[in-house]
Amino acid sequence: MRKKILILTGPTGVGKSDLSIQVAKALSGEIISADSMQIYKDLDIGTGKITEKEMQGIPHYGISHIHPFDEYSVAEFSKDVKDYVHLISNKNKLPILVGGTGLYLHSIIYQLDFFQTEKNSDLRKDLELEWKEKGLEALAYKLTRLNPKRAEKVDLQNPQRLIRALEIELENPKQESQGLNKKNSLYDPCLIILNRNREELYHRINCRVDKMVEAGLFQEVKNLIDRGLTLKNQSMRAIGYKEIFDYYKEKRDYSETIELIKRNSRRYAKRQLTWYRRYDQGIWINLSDLNEEEALEEIVINWRQ
Image (cartoon, rainbow, N blue to C red; front, side, top):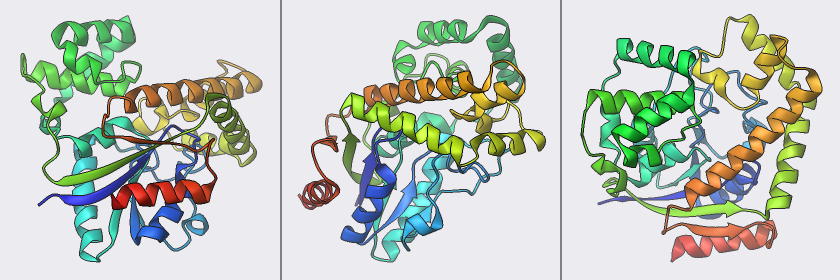
């Protein structure tokens, strides 16, 4: 029997974290993070990581449990979620996935068996070298030529995701990604997608970046650089971190860096919304039209239905 879970997603800056606490209280739930960067320890400000005070006593899983030097895959996320759901369900609580990483959520909604492909370090090195020499466009073209269906499911602007997809494809030539559209046999998800009017969302994103800078984002990145982290590390490819890394390498000035973070965050939000539109079962809630109490009521009603 598939386990009932609630998924609360939406673009960066939409207000998922605050609302998720109220949802967890209303439905007696506990929260599993579905954010690919909040899993890292010491990446707090730039990832918008919820604080212990903001959690208001609601248990959270999948936050700050990976070292910044380590890599973390979708397959590992899927396995961890299985353990978290089992733990939460055994307490007679509702598992609530909260986050905006599309591929993470996709691995829960659908059966992504092909992600179990073993990593090939030599192939990975070759692909990374090709990326450096020829750029992302060349890798994107290669994946599209090998498997157009898989290319449609991957963020072609994300080097890590693109290289991993090519690694899987090259290790399994001509293999059909049947898992992409096969519903996950473990879960029965209620998918809630939060959104706002574009102008309001973009304004919130810009203000969010300003607050992160005021809270010490540049120093947070500097501390990570001083520890030896570079753009080769998965953790440092997060928006905010990669731009500030370049700032400290004197590739752009302070103001340009902040504006670039804002621009890249807005573009990421746009890509997220495009990703979510593939889910016919998704229930969209526009927070520009509702206050928090009304939005909470909508979520609870849809969950109970």
